Amino acid sequence: MGNRTIVPFGPQHPVLPEPIHLDLVLEDETVIEAIPSIGFVHRGLEKLVEKKDFQQYVYVAERICGICSFMHGMGYCMAVENVMDLKLPDRAEFLRTIWAELSRIHSHLLWLGLLADAVGFESLFMHCWRLREEILDLFDMTTGGRVIFSVCKVGGVRKDIDAEKLKKIVEVLSNMDSSLRSITKIFLSDTSIISRMSGVGVLSPEEAFDLGAVGPMARASGIVVDDRLLGYGAYPHVKFEVQTATEGDCYARTKVRINEIFESISIIKQCVSLMPSDTAIDVPVKGNPDGEYFARLEQPRGEVVYYVKGNGTKFLDRMRVRTPTFANLPPLLHTLKGVDLADVPVLVLTIDPCISCTER
Amino acid sequence: MNMIKKSPWILHYDGSSCNGCDIEVLACLTPLYDVERFGIINTGNPKHADILLITVSVNEQNIPVVKQLYDQMPNPKAVVAVGICAATGGIFKECYNVMGGIDKVIPVDVYVPGCAARPESIIEGVVKALGVLESKRKANEE
Amino acid sequence: MQNFKIIGKDDLLSVATQMKYDHYRLAQISCTKKDKLDLVYSFVKDYDLENIRIELEFDEEIESISGIYSYAFLYENEIKELFGVKIMRISLDFNGTFYKIKKTESKNGEVAQNG
Image 1 (cartoon, each protein chain N blue to C red):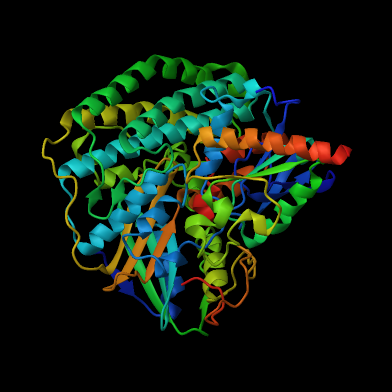
Image 2: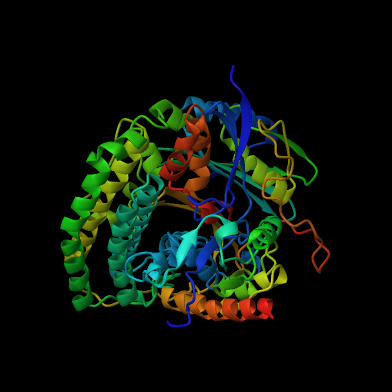
């Protein structure tokens, strides 16, 4: 038995944009246990539901996290709409789907950049973020915001995207294709990246189920689960494949996310061509929510669960959100066992951690 | 940009923000905004840093972390509070676990508005902080 | 509308074991604090969602299901700290220091807790 040491990892760490703390118990260079300590980003915004009414709360929901901001707003709205039995116009569903898929592309590109940085490929990091800026420009053009849009509201969306802008979206995405392919090719074929990721942090399908993995983490272990198949938004109208891999290691997780970027581009293009021509983008909201509902949707990081319980007044009794990173923490802690200390940053990154989501 | 006498190094810490401002801080470093052309570098080590970019509404657990990072930075130093949460607590002001404003914990030199703060305004905030650094340096010399 | 199956707190372990046996994944545990504590356990299998509801008095104890679903310890620690639910025998018990929230009295006299 080698020397046992405990190495603190975080909360302020160069590889982490957000604070999380892990106590890594090492035997020589190998991690034998990881003990999480969270709460650095806990604000307690679920309780804000008592102070903001259910329409105002959309703004708070969007600020659970700045990366999947749109989908948080959308998930909350879906839950409330289901409680209130609102049927959205088709156009609103299509617009939401376009913004949601653009968010997925931007989130995955952001993540790819951070991963490139973690394996020491600085210029690759810059290229990923350069491409991501093109997506952010589309957000800027369609919503006026780069990160937080506030276009979702209970009963629909606030802004329409006209035909000219839809054309522009397709144009930008088509132009991105070749540079996207050349960048992602590096991740999938460069020997030094592969040697950092292949075989690191393997999660078998059984473990993925036993530990409750969701999203790309589960799909990279061969579990076919994608909440978009539940049929919310415009997803029933478009064709897409659930991207999976079988290896369950860091490389597989990267491959799944890269393939999802291309899948998202295809979904957006289909949405644009199928866009309903009616002009209504919202329905009037009458009364207050009374009842409870669990809404589930697929965020870039995996399944998010929104629970809303109304009591007939404009203030909800309870709003709860279970975010994908929260579900992916146990698989992370499990896969950390047995890896080298030097691989910890890469492995932590491949679950695509979003701490502000997790702790709310 | 004649006012820049040296290359300022930046330390970024997120203590309970929503991430929006944090990715914008990172976006400042990437090709479109590229603050590195001004010699501004993001460092992970507080002892190298001149400017603390902080995007927080500060929750209970972060207070000692923020204080420690601030104390570890060498003098002269400047603090830039990025985003409305760092200024007043913003939308999270009424949450039970946030202090509401970073200036309740450490002294702040520049406030950058916005939710999320745009890269342009973050860069402007950093440039303002350079002026603060310069005057602090002069004051130290006297 | 979604179904919520109400069970007694003593049935929790057997129901959870059955769910695990049927290959359900624990999607979340949530708590609502009104005049009673209202715990909802959600289980997911593919695209099917099952909700189990348990109502508790404030001082009632409840067993942890972390022995059955190992990852339940995160949810249970969260609920234990934020709502003060007395969950017994959690596999990794942070004893109320999970989020380390501010433990001060607010203006209207109630302890700063969620729900």
